Length: 221
Image (cartoon, rainbow, N blue to C red; front, side):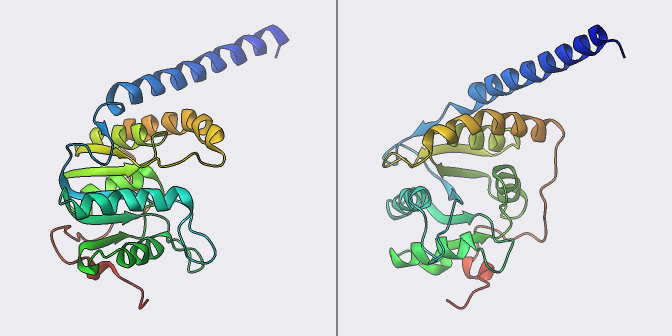
């Protein structure tokens, strides 16, 4: 193939890719930057959906996750939500975000029956999809950091959920610049997932958020 033709194809490909990244970030901004509040804001829902993040080797939440949990627990204790949905990665026996989240909430005085766990929240998209189809949530308050929240709100609203968001930031985080940079491409992926109506990695039988959260407990501790 002549170099000029190859260069032209490459240039067009890069232009299309750049255009889609730009379009995706504008789409997320348009739909996802509305309805973002502090924990003191006027929000309410069937549940606070607390998005998972790193659990340390000792089983305690990382700073990012602890701040999300504290914000969600505050929403619960103030009566703005009736339940907490802990959604995160429990794809391996040796790595379990959601039981760590549950134990943390219990230690802060949240009754176990009001804590639901989504063991297959492997991505923000999966978490939102499963919140709708597995836990039958119609109205939710999504809790995560500000860099992440617009994408979560965009996905949830695109899936037909009625949602507001609570910003969980309580400090500066290690690697925050990288997280903001990565979000540019994560938004692009989210727009693609929504566009093709992608299914989550796992579905399963419904577990209504109006029931007893202990039905989702697979741990004795």
